[in-house]
Image 1 (cartoon, rainbow, N blue to C red):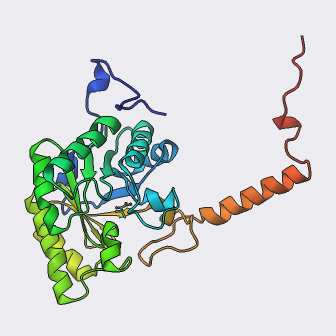
Image 2 (tube, helix red, strand yellow):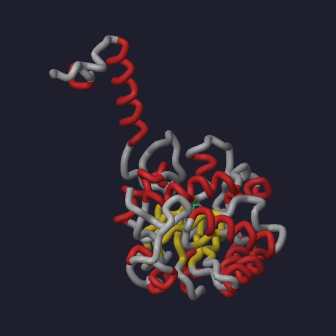
Image 3 (tube, rainbow, N blue to C red):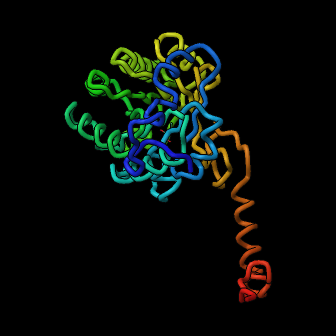
Length: 285
Ligand code: KIV
């Protein structure tokens, strides 16, 4: 694993203390240019594989569903986000790493948001946090940014709000909903978000938001009219039977994994594994 900053790898005053990762400035500069590439990552080996190819890694609270088997992201805790954030920081060296603030960790007040964001930043070494930003969250965003914490907003389909929305539904398909999503994006932008994830909206709405806000927009199910794209890694790698309409599968790891596991089980049962090559023998004197 590459050496990175973070709680388990204290760095001394040396060349290593120089910033080698992408910064908020690099992300901001990309507005309107070559699309930004972001993927979710939850562990060190995957972060290491993805790192050379992406601009940003998102330790998304989707980990509750795709790693821990929860029915939604609502049950995700600070401890889960921190543990996975540390792993992703250990595995990567150049990507800008964003860690999601989990449901219940920022909504109550600016102070609550700040104290939890500080904990995430200090204990993981990540570069920024992400907040699912209904318009109300603008207060939290500006409070954090003014105090040195870069914040990514997240508008449109907000998975932490599924219990009021009645499920995972595309957003902005009526005039009223459209206004709500545009206002959420405006509020996050004005509050100083360095980028905004737009999830599950029609192309014209994503294009309108992207043209209006000053920071880059990162789409997920929001068309190519955004300044960048993010996908949940497990979805695009084909680890599940089902994926949302907006996912393109770049691999079929579910089938590959199932056939590897079956082949292993068959080999063990028929005593074909382990073979000579996988077995230690007495050293010759
Ligand atoms: O948690 C997550 O993975 C996310 C993406 C869907 C953007 O927020």
